[in-house]
Length: 187
Length: 187
DNA sequence: TAGTTAACGCAAACTCTCTTGCGTTAGCTT
DNA sequence: AAGCTAACGCAAGAGAGTTTGCGTTAACTA
Image (cartoon, rainbow over all chains, first blue to last red):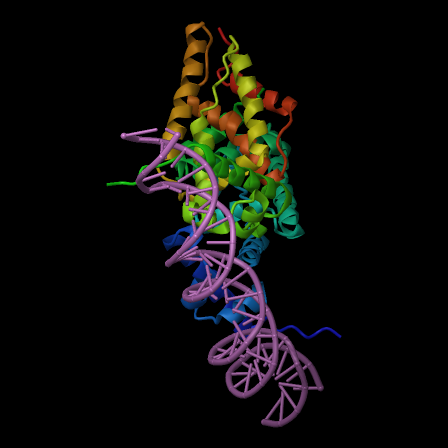
């Protein structure tokens, strides 16, 4: 007989308090200084509670990433391929600059997350593919999903990681232009 | 009066032993399990020595990254733009799959390294720019440095981080093709 | 080659992270 | 509304991580 879980009320409050404390601290302190002790102090949740629920900092961060991913932010549907791509590029550029974006990249790097991350990646891939399919049905000539990831998304991440700042809206549009001109001028 | 440093002989041996132990461990253990105690045991260097010289794991990793970066691996010079780009892309694809590559990305993310990292990035940028300039002098029509980074290098990193595996030689060449076709067919 | 002392090995002491038992609070069920 | 117990707070204790003093080794200098 498994114990009956109680996800509501207090438990949920504790969880969001801890999550927000982590994001707060990442905005102020360096990554190395982040510790469970600090998170406990900032959130007002006792250390023992954090250790019992998440075990380690990595476990806590995995939980945050998985929650964020499970939100399943919708893919844009503006009516035109260019509109969809630009909206999506701007959103990614924004996301990757946030502390959550850094957490996401780190989680991908250490690779200790469970299968949820991969499930999410597949789901997001499917949604993006659907976005491209809609364009094809309208008679546009969309790129492949791989091209979208390589030509637009990868540079967005690269800038954020190595240049320490996200790309601006103009540059994001430049990336979309580049993607759309891959096939040459549309017939 | 500052103490006279002794970088040679034993000190250098200890340093390389510790560095190699870290790379060894990263090939086997997960990132989270890495600890100074493990590094000491594997390298045969006493814990106290590691603490005295590097202080923390992050400090040690910064030292490794900085040493690697200061090596200044030469940029290819094959005689043709395509040859240079393909050679460079293959090398980056290889590097990014190694433990050192992961350390490098992590160091860039945590951003705690000193100015050496930025100095290196500038130096590498200058060398790559020189590579592109050579092509221009030969009458070829090279891309800009930014285009090279975005179209070729960024996807290489993206694949390694999010797909968990580096791109193969064929795909690396595809990226170079894409870069070279940016300007349309050369006149 | 001999002297000086930086760098290392060792071990004890110390600090902090993490675990665990127990009493209290508050979801969830009936 | 009352009972049951998951989830939390608290504090003591175990354990791992880090520091420090001292003797030894071995670079560097003269």
